[in-house]
Length: 414
Ligand SMILES: Cc1cc2nc3c(=O)[nH]c(=O)nc-3n(C[C@H](O)[C@H](O)[C@H](O)COP(=O)(O)OP(=O)(O)OC[C@H]3O[C@@H](n4cnc5c(N)ncnc54)[C@H](O)[C@@H]3O)c2cc1C
Image 1 (cartoon, rainbow, N blue to C red):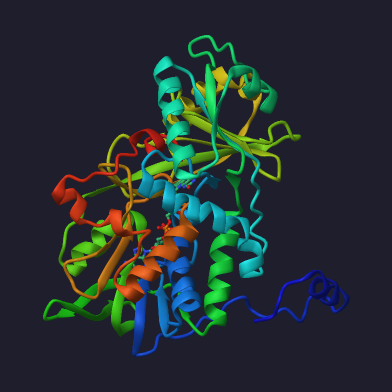
Image 2 (cartoon, rainbow, N blue to C red):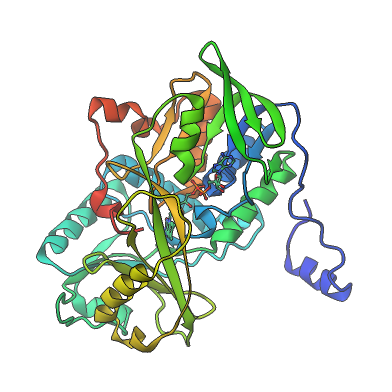
């Protein structure tokens, strides 16, 4: 793999950038692999990367029906934080957040991780109590967060109107080392590193069926032919129910569109991420100057990846109360992604009824932040059959009623 560095940029500048090699190969599928991962989103690619890096398994194919990173990974609003309530969640999200800190160096790709700080506003007494409780839980879990008062909120984000007409800001849960990263670069970085390890990333190849014999997967039927494997990982987010159906089992999951939008670029005015869950919206400013805005999921199940007008109106109307400065901004683009939501708002990282088939899904509205931790744990689960990061997130928890309730940390917040 050609290394990216300041010297490489200078060298290529002198020879009109003709010496760059392709970041990853585009091979035809082989007849059989040790492991097939369906889905080249962040979670699928990170799983493949850690299978190679941590477990020495490199005869791996990642199969993608569109282009890599073209699912939710390239559609999200890139918020990274680990201030969840329950212990298993804090463990996997904090592992992920800590891996983001060194990801650019590990992958030799600038993923633009920006730990600018994330605040979740408390705008009702109920939220104050809820976030104070989370701050206490986080301190026991070793996750650094604090509950701050309205004056500190105003100091950290001067454009906030803390005396809002309906919902004044009463405080916030603040995670100083939370932030954002460039979502495409995360997918590209993992893809490039996987390709360098000899793995095949096969784009424009849709899985149409899962073949099995005697309760074990033998391979997949795709638009590029039959491909055999010893182990299968299903990592397809909003399409999880569809692919699980091909493998012959059902999931306790719903697919629903989540939308976001960006404004025209403006001068820097906000260097933190703010979520306002009561009024149902959140905002940060991209390096280009656009205000990146998101809200809640659509109120009905669907598989669309488009935005809709009522959503812009609802979300922007809610945010204008807290950020009056944005009332005259023009909105440039909107889009949607299909998120996979579980009843307890926690992911599924699990074995399945098919012995050698594993599933990673259910990240819902908040899985971008989890990509490295999820890949780390899921690769361990696939390689060894067990992983401390994944133990609590098995499918059996729905049968046993052992929910990991993150509806406060992940219901609206991303
Ligand atoms: C608008 C929006 C905002 C969000 N904001 C945030 C945020 O701020 N912070 C955060 O942490 N999370 C956020 N999320 C959630 C986050 O984007 C997802 O949880 C995460 O990207 C899921 O990654 P993934 O790799 O599991 O799925 P994806 O990136 O969707 O990848 C799955 C891949 O599987 C492929 N696939 C599906 N079916 C098949 C098939 N049959 N054959 C082959 N390939 C198939 C798809 O094409 C897709 O590329 C947001 C999501 C959206 C939509």
